[in-house]
Length: 116
Length: 109
Image (tube, each protein chain N blue to C red):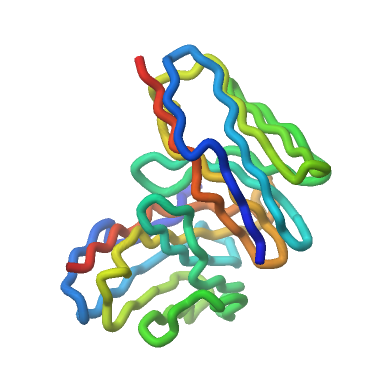
């Protein structure tokens, strides 16, 4: 079974620039998550999609972050404009009807963002 | 607000030792507790524990959920250098999935 795919793997930008990340979840997984993981901390949920609808975006800094999942499959996360404190690894995860049940989230390799 | 606390934050042991990692939680409407192993990439799933499945084992790794004490332990026996990683505990509750800060485990040869 193919895992969660993310791109790019690394991105370096200057503050105030824009950046976009892409995620392709495991086939058939209805739920998709974007997490931000700052060095030394556990992942923090930014947004959760169920199919193409938003379930939870309470911790998404909406003044600069946006995300979409138009066709209920792939998703993009955008930061515009970026700040120094946005430097982190951005993880995408998906969950669905696996043998462990719908609660188990499978993570992609992440995108390491450095804002200079 | 849901809360997950892991201890210790870091641990250094020698190859062959047995380690026990701890996770305690305060969540509303507990559904499940998950353990992940994170190396220099995204977390990989290890175990999921629920009210109906409070003990899991896979090779040298095992985990137990204590719903009375609101905690879980992850045991690794006969540790190997490849076990060096950050071990993350996450709990699914009313606020969704909440992660602890992880235990950074270092296995010395």
